[in-house]
Length: 107
Image (cartoon, rainbow, N blue to C red; front, top):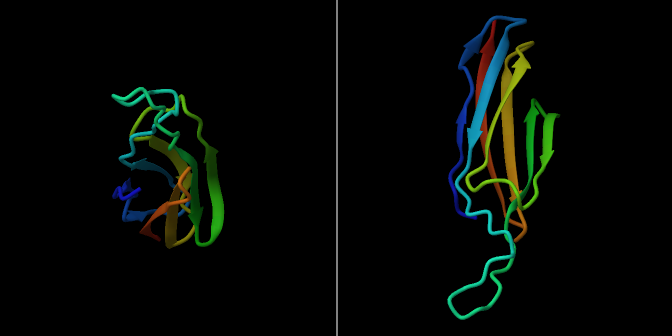
């Protein structure tokens, strides 16, 4: 997986605000049920796990299955309690992981 994820986190928020976080990563999400032009099954390779942490504490984790569309998109909310760093990680069936980070300042 050599995709570059897109992540949108507000740069600033007031303490107690509910913020929206959006992520998108490009990935074919091959289900393992399709065949190539020679009739061979194309091996399954999907993003099977997404994790979001804030300052080292996991705040969201999702296990994904073959029915998820290509280029998985996540949008979720979190309460801004302190300044810090959101860490995002997408792992696929090939054992590859793509990560991204975004900082937020809370006042």
